[in-house]
Length: 347
Ligand code: KG4
Ligand code: ZN
Image (cartoon, rainbow, N blue to C red; front, side):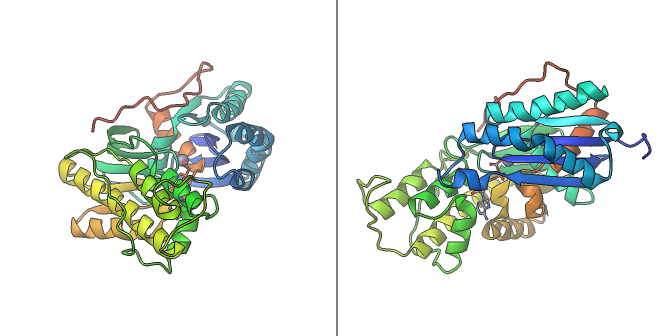
């Protein structure tokens, strides 16, 4: 393999997926493997950090081996090691960082630290031929609901974020209340298929006038009241009058409406050339439908990558690293795990 190419090993272990990938020149995915821990966490109805760290530790080396095997390359062919170092669970991040540092040290190749949120936005660059900037970037996942004004794959200005739960978290919590399995997003989407989205008018929290921030705690409480009564506790008996299908469809509609409404506000304010979507919630068909409609109505390019690139993976980590490498923005052995994203929404 010609060493004129930038061949990057990507590692992502920020939450409950151990992902390894090999990507050439920020574009060509030679391997992309994800080991999901969903089964380990599902009985708890959410991610248990201690369990997540131990599971990452167990599979990280075999996952790197398998990714290399799939790409047909050896570690000695790799140009750089890229790893998610923020945001995420601190112990989970450290497993990936330690592995990437070891590869970088032993093979004397650059180490590149990647912001997981920006990597979600990079999925569009892997899938579409050319992404036009400026764009509104929208990361909708289990940990984030963040709007960005993006001017390149590496430059994103935060313009709106959630003040409490992320959209995916709201799906997961509402599913738990409705006694649907974890992760809640796919379960609610499936249950909603035969429900009436107009059965219950759940709140669409738009916050103060003009704010691009989000809040999903109100709708979560509203779902709780519908399922458990006004003073009901999560463990208490169910009291709901509407069917679970109707509740799921109505909940999904309210969340999707809120996401689409804020996205439209951002587009009208920033006048971008396109919309880039990333994160696990982008798997939701109703959401994809609404965003595509918005795009045609406003004559904007809509970049919604296939689901496997929307959910957590390391192809986006290794892909984005190419641009940092070209900009000479490498990390060193002091690269640390930063659990929280320090960006503050400008509203
Ligand atoms: O991006 P992701 O894989 O991991 C994080 O970085 O958080 O997103 C996972 C989130 C979960 O909250 C899950 O319930 C949600 O994405 N999700 C969905 C769907 N598929 C996954 N939410 C709504 N509809 C879906 N089809
Ligand atoms: Zn993610």
